[in-house]
Length: 93
Image 1 (cartoon, rainbow, N blue to C red):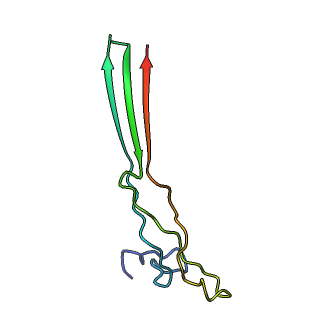
Image 2 (image 1 turned 180 degrees about the vertical axis):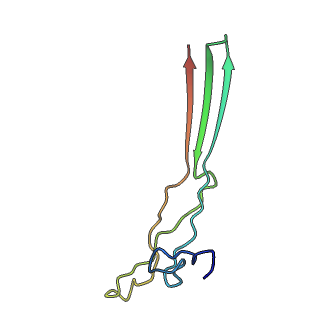
Image 3 (image 1 turned 90 degrees about the vertical axis):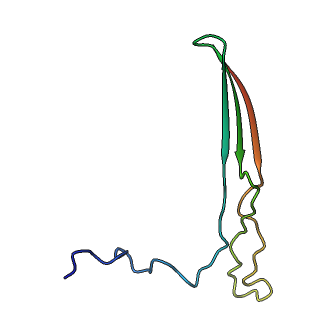
């Protein structure tokens, strides 16, 4: 009897499903903060936040409707949102 159990032995499915394929998903978020102090407890904070920084497209899964042979297996949707940039200015006193 081995001292280490079988990997991924808690379910009936394999660790990878070779028949289920989706496009890769890449999403990078980034933020910058800058504080400018006027006094010890009073400062101005500038914030910039970038969601989906490199504006990568993540496509949705393929159509799985076997009753529609014209669209079966086609990818016709986008699964993420385009780049979003937020800028904020906050005064703390």
